[in-house]
Length: 212
Image (tube, rainbow, N blue to C red; front, side):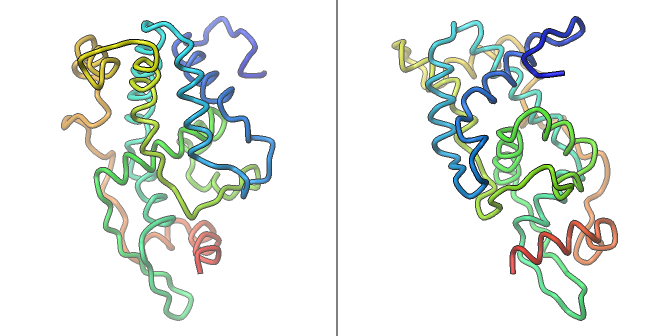
């Protein structure tokens, strides 16, 4: 069933969120190497600027919810495999597993921009990244600007003393909802070094071959 078809049990906030992400991606039918994050984010901001403040609050609240749902050890390990330095010795890949807090947020933003189907697949199993359904430019896996789109969209049409009126509204309405809240914790300890190849052998070999 298409994202745009009505589902009686669908969450209307989710429907609005993923619809905006999808419609704003005018490059989704182009080859992967023609996709440009900045163009997608610019289109997203312009599309959001046509929505009411209440809808922007829903979008921002849902974005924070989706970022929180990706705060999982497997997703962090995917970030390490895609981004961290590694060495190879006798076909064993050993990763420098440093992961910055901000960088992990920006990485999760990048995953979200890929759309609902990918989001659901990657939450279920990060090895969906190489299942043949998706192809991405992995040279830039950050989309920090997604964090600011709702505010920028609102400020295009409204004067406001705050630089973050939509995020401020979400914080006031949902104080425990923030994706960067200290009460979030990983579901398990992260794997490090060569442990990642043991857990995800095909994923590691495929991604590292592309990164070489």
